Length: 286
Image (cartoon, rainbow, N blue to C red; front, side, top):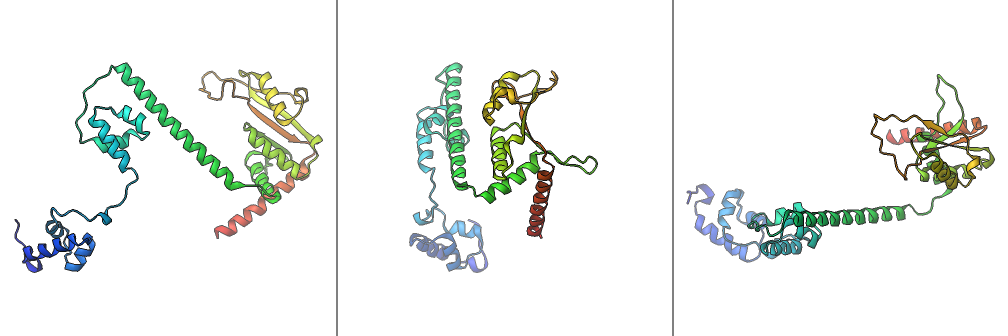
């Protein structure tokens, strides 16, 4: 044993007192303060072999999973099988059982691959369920929008996605383009809130020429509640075969453009509303 000096010279007597306090249920901090031991190495030697009292052990919600994972590993289960059984990540399983012997391979590579696939599918299902729960909880937090809230949302929405006049090109018109049907719905609800005459609305599809143009036109016509023949001429975007586009397939409908005829006055009001919102935001930052 290393010799101790100074206030720790009577080590054996100090250890007896430390053990006595430990068995009485005191924590390391309490013993350190009671005996005035400010050296962690000395404190470790004083308490060597003495287990911590139960009340100082932090509860761990995964203790049961860890114990079950170790039990299954000792039975020869692979990480993939344990993952499928317990629904936890392979990273956690690895930490829990890495000190245990590796089981012998009892399955072919094909069988192991199938188990791994099931494990990954189980993980994806758990993730998707968690994602769904988070979205549902967030949606419930919104509740019913007031007219003023919808008004503010619409102004911000337009200024993010709508056309804007430039100092070098004065074009005071209301044009909104988007590929998200929900954005289109919200924008139309905002126009209705402002009591804009629906007969001034004009709709047109913008889409890549390689897509199913007819299906896209029908999709957007149904979405906004008009006949397909009421759509303005569709704008086709030339397809570049060198680009790796992902917006393809049945779910691709291109974008819908909404124009409000004679909308110069409305545009000026939108620009003014946005300016007022920015002024308040700047005041908050200050």
